[in-house]
Amino acid sequence: MENMTQNSSTLKKVGVASLIMMASVFSSRVIGLTREMAIAFAGGARGDVDAYQIAFIIPEILNHVVASGFLSVTFIPIFSSYIANNKEEDGWRVFSIIFNTFGMMLIIFISVAFYYSPELVRFFAPGFKDPQLFNSAVKMTRIIMPAQFFFFAGGMFMAVQFTKEKFFIPALAPLLYNIGIIAGGLTGFFLESRIGTSLSFGMEGFAWGVLVGAFLGNFALQYIGAKQTGMKIYPLFNLKHPEFIKYVWLTIPLIVGLSMTFSTEILLKYFGSFLSEGSIAALNYSLRIMFILVGIFGQAVGVASYPFMANLASLGKIGELNALLNTTLKYLLLVIPISVLFMVLRYEIVFLLFQRGRFNIDATRITAEILPFIMAGTFAFAAQTVVVRGYYAMQNTWFPAIFGTIAVVGSLPLFFIFMRWLGAPGVGLALSLSAFINSGFLFVLWNRRSGNRGAGAVYIFTLKIIVLSCGIGLILWKIRIMFIPFLQSIVLGFSDGLDITDSAIENLTILGALTISAAIAILFALLFVLSGVVFKIEEITIFTSKLRRRFIKRV
Image 1: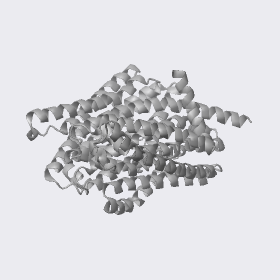
Image 2 (image 1 turned 120 degrees about the vertical axis):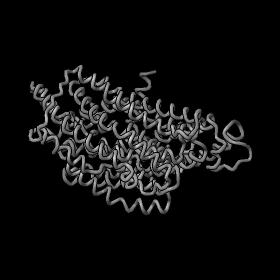
Image 3 (image 1 turned 30 degrees about the vertical axis):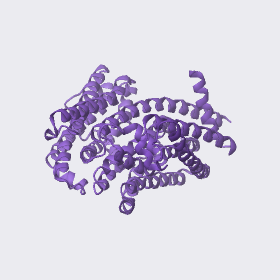
Image 4 (image 1 turned 45 degrees about the vertical axis):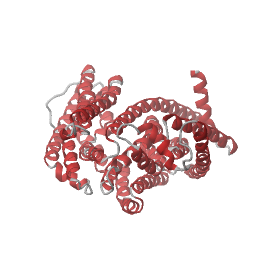
């Protein structure tokens, strides 16, 4: 009885923390989406946007090599132990050793990669043959590359602030970073429009915005914030220090392991380079839409649940840890019907988000055709962020890293097969399938290693939600098709006599798209709630009742 009460209390805390994180992640995603809208406005789905996306491959690999994105798993626990034991001065020495050593290593890597940028771009985007676009990709790669040092240094500075329980200044980093990108890109766009294309301001403005935004938001501001907490940096290099060795040991599997998030960006651009001009851009726009849901559900729930998982693991309460993981995944499965809603409204969503400036009707159609295949992997990407944290909670970073690498390499034939069969949508489908392979097998192997007896209920619930979502999707799609003539005859969306097919997007207006989206979303909400009652799906009824209570409180 006591264990059930404790488990219920833990789930309640995770729920509250998840809602807080959802709000934070949602704000970050909105800013990122605004950035993508600016890129779509200035570049559309053209070859120069492909070049801009390819320019991130080498910098992202450099960022991965020094594990800048894993500092919460690696550095913070080490530094926190010094603070907790009143050995802060020793903590600054360890901080200095890690900062100096990895920072120097990164500067060397950046210098080498800067020199060999043409060869590296040719290796990672072998299908990118247009000489002008290739040279543009190389140039933007070199512009963006130094920003990786600012990300690494800023990550260390933010880790210090997190340890000192200071969160406001780190929260400003993505805001300033994205503002820098948007400002740089739009400046380049207007200069190009005024002066002409010969000076190649265009997409290069976004690249310069990356560099400036990273310096201001991730480096300069975070340095000020860290100094306010008492940060000290000493000129120390000690490769034999036990804490430095511990940091390296924790970091190596994260560096050598190919996580789905990291490999997705690389594979999308590698295989997209073999496709027609604008395919990489369209794939990226679709991926950003999908990552909105992954961020709100998967990332928020994963970050919020991790401290509770780590606490249960440290106490040896594996049964309660499994119960928490199972319950978290069952609620996370509710993202599947929401992703189906996005599939049904794919044209309207892409139209409303991106179709302006240079993002024309052809770009909308290409992106909308890719979106359902990308959205199919939403749950898998979200679940991976939760399941992998179960391994981290058990202080096992090696297994998910090794298995993740095997899963990514093993999924490569899928990309070749579906790319040749379906083109850009096939690359999206391969991404979704590889995500399911990765997260699915990680969960299966976790169950065997931990003796998770409740896993069967998760499998059954998964099948139930998939069948339910397909049914809701078919109903919504039929009603959407029926709803178009209604708009055509009354208001606005379409011209008289037009065939009611997806090609009707050519005559879609903002008000027409909003009307269709609102009507279908309301119907979806009704079907979603009704299905929870009729089929007695507890997770749906609890989820909707919580949302209703919070809405009533705010009103």
